[in-house]
Length: 340
Image (cartoon, rainbow, N blue to C red; front, side, top):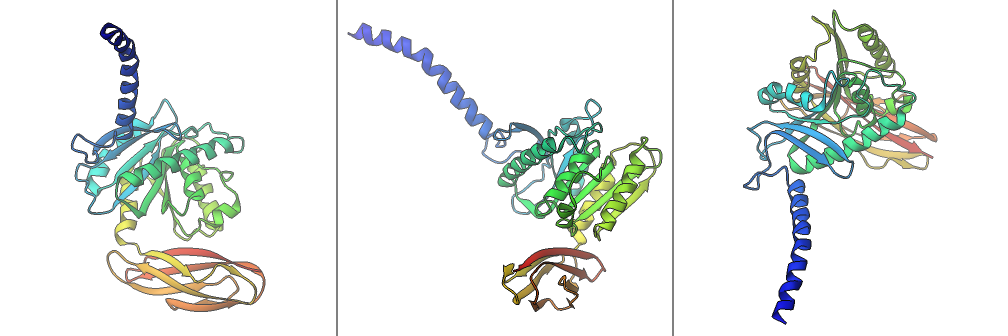
């Protein structure tokens, strides 16, 4: 009887070992952002978002602490084989250390200068879905400043950077095109309208690749006529360079000195006449708020922080708020009010 039990155990053990090994590897993958002490890891990380089936690469400065919120840059690479997501991460290390920025570089299917924007909308949408899954994971792991999340792309990475920044204004505070591609066909006008309160910075080199300066000038026209008040464009010395220093300085200036503006509305829909109470929720990291400008979409304006407004006719009204700080910096916010 004992011999039978021993024989049975010998048959079971080889089956148990792979199961235990698989479970251990799964746990290791799930906790790969933790070090041996159970703290979140810093430095260069190579990770995978399993739900989206997408690899992503991070750099977290060694000075990271969960006691404060950190800016986050999502960076799309240029066209392969001239660039890669791990290479993009590595190129940001010095700026991340200097300014205290967390870097996240997912793999992108659409980070290529050869992208057919009209035909590849489904690929862009898949990249959007994957990046949202990655961001949810990163924000769950690290203490990220919700008002300090930016997306950028170099060269062909400009296509997904502009696309995601416009599609997700509730997440990304700004878009940075670094000698990057751009197309007017990335999003429709309604998507652009919903993002026009966000920051956009495009720059290109004086001796850049053929076509890049022209695409950036077209971007200037496209963003400007769609009402992006915080759009900036610059021609910089040199060629088709990444210029991470310039991008980091620009975004950190916004994080450190620009006001933050949000709109609190008592309701966003209802029957006409519809009365809504609005309040500007605004803070300034290095000074104080000195002015408010409300535009209600029906011709009326107000300069108070809190205001009650009545919409008399059925229509979709775009309420646009501009907040001004003591340095003259202007931040915008918007909300749609549907009057039936």
